[in-house]
Image (cartoon, rainbow, N blue to C red; front, side, top):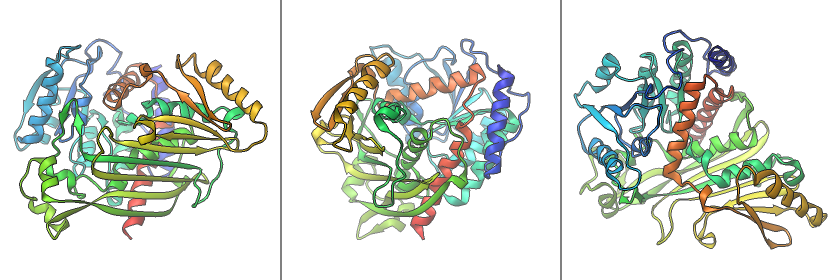
Amino acid sequence: MRQMFFLILATALFISACSGGGQNSETQETKDMFTGAKGEVKLITLDPGHFHAALVQKKMYEMVDSVVHIYAPEGAELKGHLKLIESYNNRSDNPTSWETKIYTGPDYLEKMIEEKPGNVVVLAGNNAKKTEYIMESVNAGLNVLADKPMVITPEEFPDLEKAFQLAAEKGVLLYDIMTERYEITTILQRELSQIPEVFGELLEGSLEDPAITKESVHHFSKQVSGSPLIRPAWFFDVEQQGEGIVDVTTHLVDLIQWEAFPEVVLSKEDVEIISARRWTTDLTPEMFRKVTGRDEFPDYLLKDVEDDVLKTYSNGEINYRLKGVHAKVSVIWNFEAPEGAGDTHYSIMRGSKANLIIKQGKEENFITTLLVEAITDEGLEDFESELDKAVNQTLDPLYPGIALSKLNDKLWEVQIPVIHRKGHEAHFGQVTEKYLRYLASGSMPEWEIPNMVVKYYTTTQGMKVAAE
């Protein structure tokens, strides 16, 4: 089985190499590292500047040792990370039992490479360093579980391609954290799109009317694990965090690939950027103080300050074709959500028989809601029968309790029990569990690595076009 894994991996990476993201071999060094045994995965957290690093540890995993080594500079970001881990250890409901060992010297990266006290590096922090951290970790023979984005500029994209090639040569697994694949409405949207009797075929679409649209609205001021989130000041510097068009859009591009072309190996040649644009979110000093705790803009942000207002390019849109299918992704960052609201997602997949729509607005009480809309008035009775069969016979055994609610002659809501709504924070544990299965079982879908390359090619090329 383990030999089969690396045969599949090498094949996928050869395909990726043909598209410029090459990987083609592995070594014995880490090939037989994992068997699925208790505690054999030993985590190293490198420079955890984003709360996503802590969310990987919101639960325990049998395969993961409870001791986690942290290599990071001293500062508020490390303290915030440790505070979250401590809160998980001390909560009354199902507490964790993580033990941390910390190194904070200025040579933290070099020290990690020298000591290598673990075998899996978790990366979530300053994105300006992300690609370098990935390359250094992989070169040291360490597996990497990285938060998105892995790369934030077109200039650095070739370095990421090299990192994937090096990962194959070293026999280690480089993987990014795609939490949105675990959101139940997205899962069911994908499932229904694969049932021709309901969806028909995915349309080709057009620039004005894309076959797939995904829009994401986020907020700088928010709560995480029940407490106000304090963001590092560099989060607002696009040279360190990355512009919105290469950050959150990573999830949206990933979902389009995952839903429209499930288990298909993609290449860069499948992508054609049609247009892209970017715009700023404006923050007053008071807003900045609320989310960072800092009274003044640091020097590195002054380049983006006009009339005492910080203008950060956190918003973006990419219109592109993927294997001839028109798609659009867009991300918007507002300062703060309305009362009772939070981050929101909108998505539509257009088929020859129906549209599959995800909404999360005020009308839906800010809860992700999946709608099925028939696109013609003909044969509605037969369509409804096929939809009922798809939900109640095909999908209900997989996702027990889902049901249909008819809203009008051509529109239905897929009702989803709370048990299937895990929430964004819980999705990090689900991604980690899948990553652990990849390590332990010696199997990995052949499309995963080449499609990661294509994903980051799409986002970075979108940024390049938007900046022209």
